[in-house]
Structures are given as structure tokens and as C-alpha cells.
Image 1 (tube, rainbow, N blue to C red):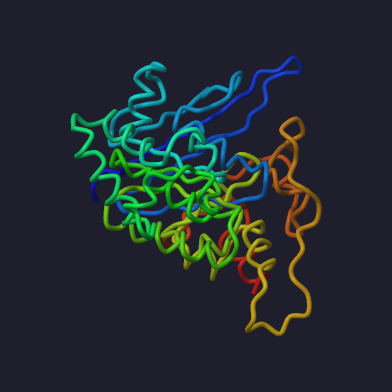
Image 2: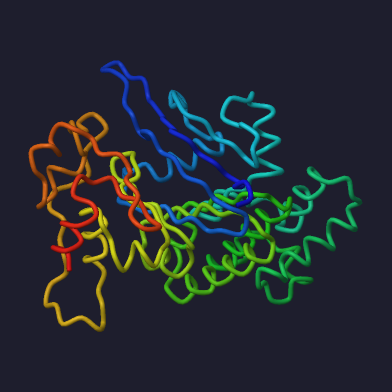
Length: 328
């Protein structure tokens, strides 16, 4: 197997406070290959966005990487200086945010912003950069790109702005794209278009993608593999089909059961009792045990590690037999 584009090993993110150190991401490991989309899913507060921010070097102070390592194409990037990290972030890693206006300057025409990005990372003339910007806008589905390239961000709809942001992310031909809830603010029909666009462009360009979302529907349509996060840790990880059809961890089982199924005769959706624990109150043992119907004494005191199950892995003392059987 070729080396992964992104390799994260035992990543730990901490926030020092007056009351002690809060652990937002704890012992998270995963790889993403070229052309692969890894979906990262979970409730708000699960640590999804924090993991993405740590990978790309955008943790807000006093947040810090307190352990583990992040490698991009074999090169360690979690311990490099801010100036060097800015070069990596601009040239080799791109970020797509939920709100397109976070990435677009409202005072500049979209063409100017794409051209500036291209010329920052490649020694080309403005004319060559403009031609490339036009091709990018066409690739992401902007109709009449030659006319729209000189428009301002406010002259585009939300879906069109997200397409522009994707063109901006692809301008430097990055090896890795981190997309944080890129379709949440869009209506369903536009979501489907952006998802299809994402899949096509990433396959064609061979970029590795970390897709952060709370929407399992987006994961099912877009990702090759999925990592389910809970309370700062990965609860289950594996190929999308395996995790969706045969979930092992009780939390994943609950997430799958909460999705409406038109073919099902069930009168009620599955409900997971309780809420995600606060960082100040993560329980001992398995963090999910207060909400788990299958918890027993060991779950209260000993934290399970990810254990292989076929092509997937789950952090549960009951995996792979009991939970799967009862969930069915």
C-alpha cells in the first residue's frame, strides 16, 4: 500500500484553564490515502472540528497539540513553526468552511481572490493565472465563468459561493482538503450538487479529503470510510458500507437508528438518552457508558481501545458480538 497523504497518530489536544486541563481530542489516529474521502461524524462537541483544526494548525489559543503527531505525505507538520505552517496550509493543505463568506473577502472580486492564490503559490503571469481561475470556476460548475469571474461574493447565491470557495481551495492544487460542514447551510438539492462536485473533483485531482459533518446522509453519499467520534475519541472507524449496515459501537448503532428509513416499518426512531458530556465532566472508563443500554461494570472504570472487526474497528468491550446481535 502507498504511504497515506495524511497520517494522524495518537493526537491529543488540550486547553489549559484555571480549573485544570481540558482534553478536547484524545488519542485519535487515522490515515487518508490519495483520492480517498474520510468522513468524520458525531454530535456537536464530539471533537470533529477540533481534530481538523489541529491537523491544519488552526487551533485557537490556548488550545495546543499536547501529544501525538500529524504527518503530511510522510513529513511531520505538527511541530513546525507558524511561518512554515502557513506555507504548508496555503500550498499543500486547503480548508473549506461551512460559511463561504468566511473564506471570501466581500471587498474583492472572486477572480481577484483566486488569481492571488494561484500567483502566491506558483510563478505565473496574471494572464495565465486568470485563465486557470476561469478553468477552475468552470470545473466547479459556475455557469458563464467568463462573465462571473469579475463579480463580488454578494452577487452569488449560497450554493454558488460554496462552489467558488471550492475553486479557491483547489487553486494551489493541494494534497489534502479539510472540509468542515461544507453543505450544512445549503438546501437539500444544492447539497446533492455540491456533494457530487466534491466527489468528482477529488477523484480527478487525487486529493485526500477529510470531510467533517454531523449528517450521516452526506457521509453515506460522499465518503469512502467514516470515523465516528464521541467525546474527543474515535468510537468506530471503517468503510462506510460496513459501519452503516453493521454498526458495532452502541453510539454508532444509535446514530444509524435515528435516521429515517423509507423501507422500514418501525413506528419510532431510535433515541439516544442523555447528552454529550462536557469537557469538564467526561466520565471515567468508556465516555459513552452513562448513555449506553449495554454498559456493565467494566465500562464504568476501564476505557476500551479500538479493536479490529473485519475491515472496521470499534472501541467497545462488547464488540463484535453482543451489541451487533442485539442491535439487529
